[in-house]
Length: 315
Ligand code: NDP
Ligand code: OXD
Image (cartoon, rainbow, N blue to C red; front, side, top):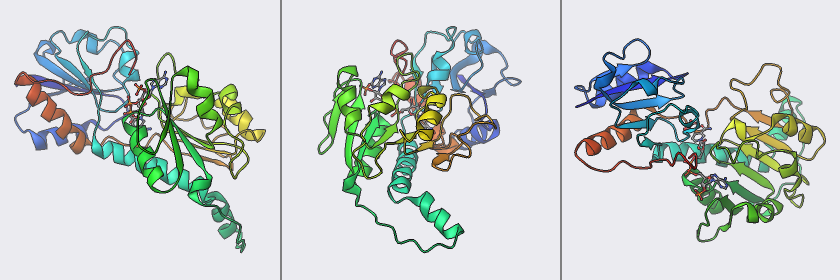
């Protein structure tokens, strides 16, 4: 079989190469930067945030696999060879993201920060609570991950709606599409869950103006933001301003304009913000390698690749 090359930034190379060796001991595995060997022997690149120009040099590439769902870092390099780019769609990753989204919706809904503070202060505070159906959750980016999280929230009783580029039809969930329907979607959303890809069109879409259009009719009197899509979707200066002025009630942020989040960011210590380190839906090396290997085998036998991204759309 043709050689494969791992080109990873910020991820543990050994855990990926070990996973592939476990699944296919005879695989010719190369790795960037020191173990690439003869570049013309490499047929598949398995990449996460590859440094610019590295893919350009691999002349016989048949496909690039993004080892995560987002392909923004690969498409940001204009020298990437014109071969299919496959993004990961995998039940394991989808479940992990739904866990993250459901957990954060519930933490805001059940006022977990207040409970934690009360416990620290040994304060007995039987405050009034509300049912899930008092909250309208809007999922911005109603694709693979958004639809799964939406179905799970719906099953728990939340009023769920989804916004996407093209119209979706999902039983029991109100759907909105395109810029023309964005304001109506925002106006009904008490909690905004962002699962969009980062593209030219979505850069800084989460800003002061958008937050001003969200619902103020929910039980907290101001909206809540949960972003697990990409950091460059949000203007952090605007988020901090909206939190400080009460235009935003609270937020859960897994992704940031620059990662790691700067030590001096006010988001780290804001009392109504949950910060996590881009861990909402990890790519599990063994599970994702199994997915990639299945596709490589099928492609080598003349079959099709799955979930090829459209570079013009950017996702
Ligand atoms: P999908 O491609 O399945 O879904 C993307 C959704 O966004 C689609 O519904 C798409 O609309 C919509 N969309 C894209 N651009 C626009 C736009 N300009 N206007 C309106 N809607 C738009 O991707 P996934 O659900 O698999 O993943 C979503 C993102 O989640 C990834 O791109 C990645 O950035 C992020 N992610 C983050 C992780 C983390 O750990 N924090 C882990 C995994 C993913 P349509 O359906 O009409 O095409
Ligand atoms: C992804 C990610 O895109 O981990 O898969 O962010």
